[in-house]
Length: 129
Image (spheres, rainbow, N blue to C red):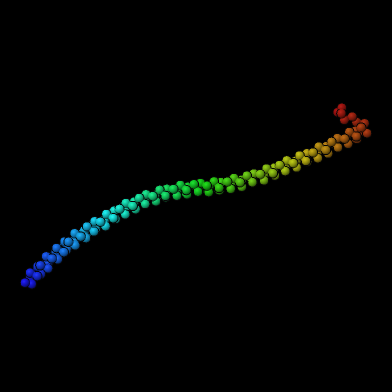
């Protein structure tokens, strides 16, 4: 009798176990299907992020180019200022030179007049020589 009860209990357990495995198997299949759908959604999200990454790379490249342009503009501005300062110095030197030449020409003209006056008093004709 005890063997029968144990055998019956064992058979009932096997049946219950098979039902449980079948039931859980269906649930796990549904869960697997859900995870597959979630995986597909994550793949789409990954693709979107890849596109966003590409956009950010383009933006970063443009910002770097702009920074390079800004740096070059600063260098050109600095160079232009240096050149203008140098040109102003040269223009001042030219003005000084022209003023000095005008003074020298005036002094030379005065000296010529004095020479002609002295020559005429001494009796020397400077135009013939």
